[in-house]
Image (cartoon, rainbow, N blue to C red):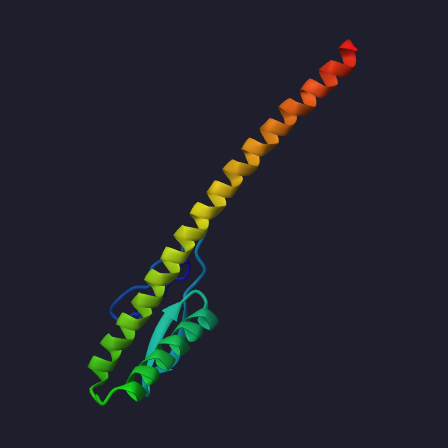
Length: 127
């Protein structure tokens, strides 16, 4: 994740100074499963999008189950999100492997065609 996401600073903590490549963290309030969380990050829209995903996943888990325990709902939602992440990573790895094979095949074919073209051009010079 390229975004900085952190809990807000307490009054006794000094905020860290941003480096050249960091933006200054902004405060953002999000509502997840009827609970308000005050967070800080460099991209509030991104944090809100993440919170909406977590909220939707928790509500889906809650709708499918009989549990009212929000911690249990959160853990089941986290497991669902982790499953989606692992599936996406496997798909990415598979596609990356296919792309690598395709690039190798294309390079091999291009090399073969270049050699064939060189032979034809050499034959024209001789003849």
